[in-house]
Every structure is written in C-alpha cells, then in structure tokens.
Amino acid sequence: MLAAQLRCNPIIRLFFDGIEVTRDKDKRVRSNITALKKCISFLEQGGRLFVFPEGTSTLGPAHLPFKEGAAILASRFNFSKGRPLTVVPCAVFYDDPTHLGGKAEIVAGKPMVFTQSMQRSEIHAAFTRALEEVGIDYSSFEQQQITQQAAVLLSLSGNQSYHFFLRKIHENESYYQIVAAALSEISNSSLGKYKGIAIFPRSIIGSLWTWLITAPFVFYAFMWNLLPVCAGWYCSKKFADDVNVISLWKIIPAFTLWLLLTALEIILMPQITVLSLAVSLLGFIVYGAWKKHTVGLYNWVRHPQGMKKFNRLRAELYEKIIQ
Image 1 (tube, helix red, strand yellow):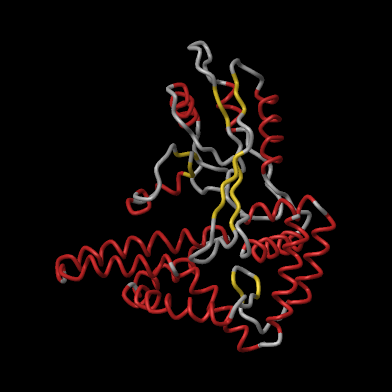
Image 2: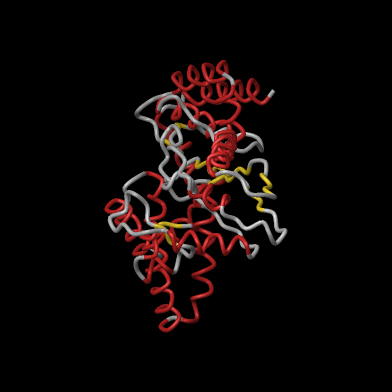
C-alpha cells in the first residue's frame, strides 16, 4: 500500500508500484474502499502486501498512532478457503537518512499467524503490541539523538549492526548514561561529522591509504555525474518536507537525469560507456568509506590531540556495551 501522491506522474511511477490509498493529510481526499477490496483480494490469492501502519514515514522520537488499515484487512480476510494469513511486524532503522552511504536496517518481529476471523479491535491491539515490541520509542528528541549517535559510533567497530547498539542502549538506562557522558566529552562544534558524530581515524596510515585509493574513483564518479548529483541536491532542498525523504528526493531526479544522459552517452560515445559506468558505480560504492576517512583525517588535522582520547572512549564504550 502506498500514498496516491507517489503515483501522480509518469516519472515517479517508474520508482513506485503498489495499491494506492489517500491519507488524511493528502490534498485530494477520496474513498479508499476500492483500494481496500483490492488489498484483501490480493492477500486471499497468496500475495504479499506491505503496509505502513503510521500512514506516513516520519522519523520522530516515538511512533505515531497506528492506523487501523492493516487490522481492517485482516478482519475481512476470507478464511473459508483454508489459507492462513501471516503478518510480520517490521521496523526500519536509518543510521543516516539524509546522505548517500547511509544504511537502512529492516528488523522483523515474530510472525503472527491467523487462521480464523477476529474482531478488528482485537487484531489492531495485537498489531500495536507487536509493532511496539519490534520498534524503539524515545522519550525525547535528545534521547533519540544521543542513542543514535552512540549507535553509529559503536557500529563502526566490530561486526555488530547499528540496530544492535540502538536496542542495547535503549533497554539499559546505565548504558544510556555512559554513552551520553562519553559523547559530551568528545563533542566539538568545530569538528566534522560523519553520520551525525565527530570521528577520528583508528590509524593515520591506514586511513590515509584508504583515502588515497578511494578518492580518484569518488572524484571521477561525482564529476562525470555532476548534473544528476546537483539535480538531486536541489530537489532534496526544495521538495523534501522531512529528513526521512531527503534521500528519496535526491534519488528520483538524479537517477532519471542519469538515465537520459547515459542514453545520450551511448549514442555519442559508445566506446567509453561501459568503462564510464563501471568507474562511476565503483565510485559511488566506495563513497561511504571515502567520506568516513575524509572526516576522520580532517578532524585529526584540526584537533590532533583529540584522536587518542576519542579512540580510548570508543574502545571503552564498545567493551562495556558488547559484554
């Protein structure tokens, strides 16, 4: 199920497909009865349907009230054919929703299997409990920001996921107090930020070596694709109404313009197209690593004495929370 506005023009339709519904906040209001019937029919035929129960994708500190759309679908599902209805609660966690190179982690909860009809209110209550269990709510924006910054910092070490540290810090007040105190020690407004947190290299030689290897590919990728990159940047500034859709407004115009320019390149310079695409793709793949080491090296140059303290605090935090 998706917002009808995501299917409002031919270009956006290239990126989104689904059953259109109109939300309360949308300007054009119409009945969703036909859409709901289509969803139920699709499920009864064995289809897989993804529903955003908040009716939006905003990234506030706590979830919004869950809509009853999913409960309506489940309550009207026809079990007479002997097919069960399986519902999997999911939560999406972004370590940096506004920049290229950020990660989106999708966490699935325990599947809920329905074999007979139930009251809508009972289903909605069960869905709410399941979603609140798999999601993470914060009491304030400050708590959310500190927890997320700490999770980014800790996920840079070892092989544990961003969500793993979010959950550990959120569920243990003593961990939260420890990371809040540590972040206040290393906070400095003059330092560069990587995914919202100031970082330093773990090794100057290793960081510089990685930067030298990745920099030529990143530079080429951005210079060769400068028009699409600029188009995405401009549209994200002009049209994005929340941080969670900034990347979306970067991708849609940038990818569309890139397709047009690539088609033109194939016509005018076919002999370099494959090489150009390969180097560009490699540049965007290594962009995250290049940016991390660029920020780390910049902070080392600006504040060299802070590197030892930063790495000590990061190692201490990791040992305390990973135990």
